[in-house]
Amino acid sequence: MRADVGDRLVIKGHAVGEPDRDGEIIEVKGEDGAPPWVVRWSDGHEGLLFPGSDAVVEHYPRHTRPRS
Image 1 (cartoon, rainbow, N blue to C red):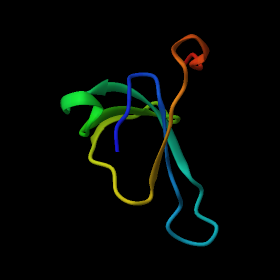
Image 2 (image 1 turned 90 degrees about the horizontal axis):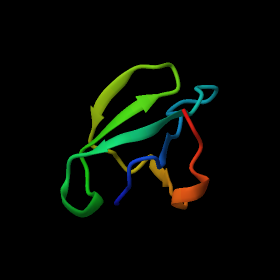
Image 3 (image 1 turned 180 degrees about the horizontal axis):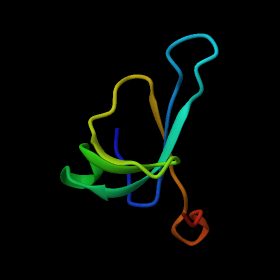
Image 4 (image 1 turned 90 degrees about the vertical axis):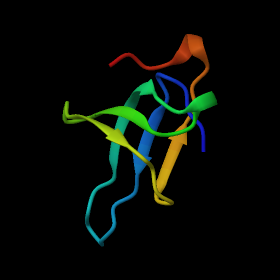
């Protein structure tokens, strides 16, 4: 799994009724887009993340990335 700064990360809820978590990748610490990544979650919290199998990266072309 690889990502670029500005990509969106989505982690699926683990239980019925639990919402998905989403955030913007604001820093890539691994080589060539590899984890770990620093993520700014939609609630404003920032943290270092090594994604699991429940994580999905949504890639955005450079000129259409959403602003945070």
